[in-house]
Image (tube, rainbow, N blue to C red; front, side):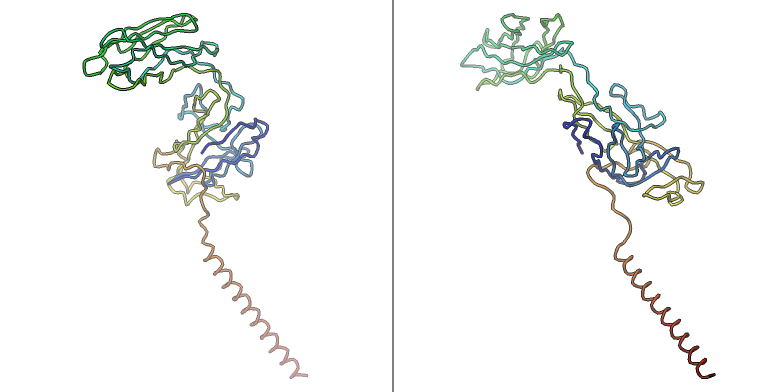
Length: 321
């Protein structure tokens, strides 16, 4: 599932997030000082970005630090860092690929891409491919009118890359940038050489989050990057039937249920999570309605017995008179 934040943090209150445990295990929630457990995965975000149940209990899990989650620590409130900024990533690699024609036009062919410096500022890089021999090409990296570096690329007679696999040029900010050339070929046909991508990104703000089957909440940022934010905890018990009901689909551990065993979904016999669905009630409505009718008829029969007994006693009183 994916929940969007595009309307702003102030409008996130009450945003529903449904999930279901596929297999054994219970969600862990904190209600006041009590740690409770539930199978009902209908949660929402409160004003502070915490994942809560309909009655206000806070879902428990582990928060991520720079995208790393330590599930060995004690679980805490699952709170999404609304308004968090993801720092920019400087471009250090540019991936090139496609086919350079073995015959016909010798170029130059140019492709442009947006790269980023350490502060997230955009720079327009241009890669220019020019044929210099039967099986040789020149790949020049430039920004504006300035040439930042040139690589001499050769191909084998069968069109595969002979070398080099990569080349390095220096960006306008002084950072070495590696060109990955391994996906270039030289076959007969049209030119398809292009820039496949680069590893930099501008500063990003949290816009949405998605839930993985292992309970990981992954943030989706405005710069296209993704980063783990938190992971939900699941509890398992040796005897789930020994849990004590406390209302609102929640349970409390007891001596009969055994020790609470906390862990991540999909480990230790715990089930995986499915997003966008909730677990149905295990109550059989048809059976319950049947039992209700039986109880009603039983009550009516008992009422008639009492009425008949009263009439008999009334007749006896009348006979005595």
